[in-house]
Image 1: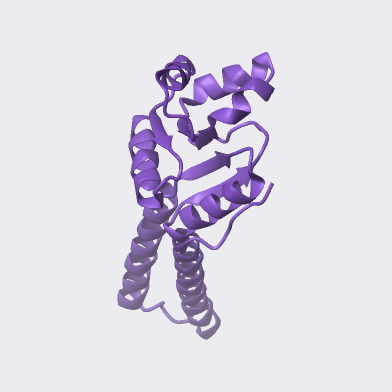
Image 2: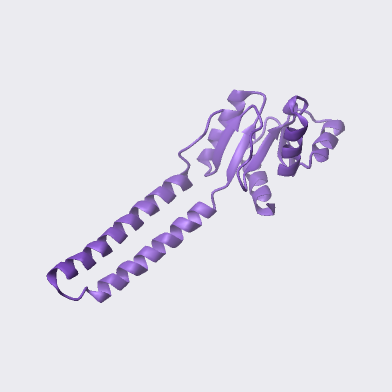
Length: 176
């Protein structure tokens, strides 16, 4: 199972946290300097610094809340990894594998229907509860009915266009 990191949103969050930490360190230094000198701290600079810190915090929160976690499960581990890497480049926090694992809160499941027969009852229930985005090479009505039976939120036929998959993930993330 390969975890894909380096998404643009993760970098945005990290950079925002770094700037926030620097801003708070500057404010702390201003207060310590004033205390050491026995003077009043420069209220205008402190207020400006606090405004900057709150703005940075708001930006970091927005970036972190907009990150959508995705688990891509496929019987072809390499295809799952490539798909997860592509999603990561689009800003998703994507992970890949060939076996079901407990999903994180809010994580979207992209599920290859060929894995369904290998799942035990608990794993099948976890897939059903996740309302997965089904990806498959099957185009027949029986496969579509099987996907509907596990509560799929979307049914995409391989080869799957990454932008189409991203749109399905966005729809699924909104519906929770």
